[in-house]
Length: 247
Image (cartoon, rainbow, N blue to C red; front, side, top):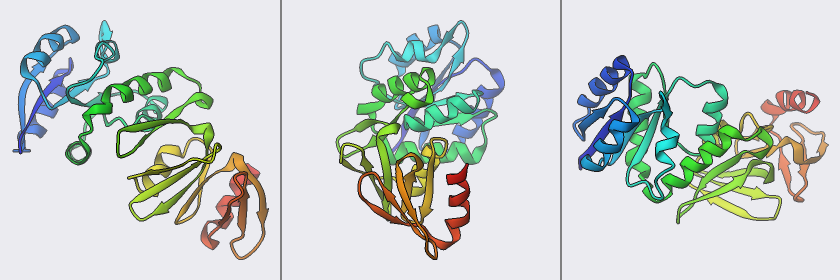
């Protein structure tokens, strides 16, 4: 299967890098390059791409201004950005793929593989909206996009008590007693939530430190959570966990 690709990018070097990397991938056909949002408004509808690589900043506009005009995005999008740490967190929480400039070949291939594996067009517009909201909102109001069989659920991070692994799936347990099963590994979830007072106390358990009610000493010990659950702390994670509690 082949995919049509459009690049929306105003930096010449970035255009050349993306073009060269795409030419090494026979499944992907470069349909055109837009140097600005105005050019993208013409090129994208004409070429009907499956995937768009899009720079975030395209003076005098941002790509968000253009993308928010869509009720439903008929293509997948991978952002290219030089944004800092706060923006990177927002991209991850919204389940939006992005590449940090300068773009590396390894990260580029990873992004293409994610596109081929997931290709969930139906929720792209909603994820863009959530990304934009997370960029503007204080950390306490951030929400995470959780992929489900029917699309995505957008859950406030402050409502997540803990996460439990089951091989390639993870169950999210919330304050209102919901159990949300997502097709992500616990390692992926840990990476997305690492900046929001979550700690992996065990290979199978990631917990919200704000919802611990008690720690019971032992070889590793265990924690009691506000939802009534008891979670074991692994022996090798105990020292770092206690540091986090004291910090």
